[in-house]
Length: 519
Image (cartoon, rainbow, N blue to C red; front, side):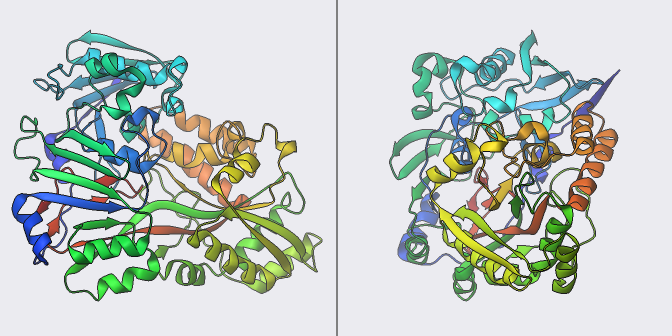
């Protein structure tokens, strides 16, 4: 017996949420509106336009302008159709069959068909290609071409999270002809089926133009779109206020009020799935005692954390995964209670507290967050040394460590976003025993056989009810174990011209600009 899910065009289009409109401003802004051009200012630089070789959300977002996948996400991170009309899975979650839309071609005229799916997926899954997103398709055995418009993915083992994985932006499809022509350089020559076609890419500027033959009638609304990179927050805000850009991302929480008070601008304030937490190395004392980990949760005022670090633009984190992830189960909060924290520390043998070192990135939010935590933990006797680290140093100290015994980590101020929108990728990389570095990101070396079993059970079926029960169990176990200090969930903060509509970021931070238009 197989389970069938029909994905309608209405469902796909219904996921796009409109943003309130207003009047354009400035001569340049009016010129952009009249000509149907949009400029988006971003903080980072694009690294590649080959989604299968991109580890960063920004590069994948840029590729999304030109490329499409079989499935995608709506505004709330729910899976919706794109190049596939429907799919079906066998009960063992080892075979997934996709029924493809017909009559679609890539920008270079190459047909979109099941053979194109096979070439793209097997390219990412082939270790010999050394693509950065290999892990997303590590379970793929092969893709069978059943006919021109039907592709069946056969897996090496059960993987119930395969459908949301296919919606991940890293699995957008490139033209097979472009892959053959450009090889490893296809990331400089992207050819897809999307609403825009590649025009040019300089170090800080990507330009795309409307693809007149786009298969979704009426889209795109814009004639051209530019992504400009500038790491300086003030410079991006100046671009927006001058009309040189009509949208900028992100907005520092401390600058949100400036945007809110400008009648020509609109603040985008949406929920995200970016969680903030403290990981603790459970192989080391005192973190091997769950009472200590629970004490640290009670020692931190999470509401004050949101106000101080995020200027109020953060939501509570009340589970091991955030809302907007599948199978989310809210837990009973660790209330702010310093006295209870002291009692738990005393019961664990640390009545006078202890000394600790916390690592985190050397950006403003991380440094502010760690300094706040330093003050909070001092109130229960924990003397915290804060060490902001550059990315390369962080990788060497944490993610490339070969064995738990070699790790010097004590506490880590970190963040995580599950870009599949699924509980598997929100939990397994961070809490499974098999996810210790350098394999994945369980940097605290948390290990619980019952959690491992629940995470495994969540992948052994495609039945949502069975998967939901498994992940509910995992979340409760992780929460009760206080595997992290659960701090909060960031908000998506961007700014735009009030005249711009249908341009936003998904909860995972990915830009969605395909339907952008001016009022």
